[in-house]
Image (cartoon, rainbow, N blue to C red):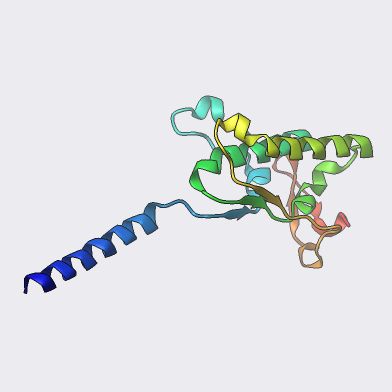
Length: 160
């Protein structure tokens, strides 16, 4: 009887521990939709609302910095890879009017800053991934673009 009670208790104990760990352990990976940040800016940090909220980016340079800061802010929530999907498509409205050399420089800045997140956060950072494509997907051709200053500036189909 004592043995059954002990096995049952251990099973219940380990089940409870598993449920606690499942609910509190960070996710392994997250691939973000960059429109969250591009459309709304960076959310405020509790108790620092007056100085830590960033409004939506007005240009490509600000958009890149917001995306990198988002990775830095959320790094503690995930113990694995983080990434952005369809980044070139969602950044395309910010590219209008930028020269090719300037665009290359800004994309190098994005890669450089993602690679140096460990310096910014002061600890080892997991790998980052950026999903890109040579053109915008046909399924997004009628999706409205929320551009700088929260203005609708057309559809993604216009940026082929």
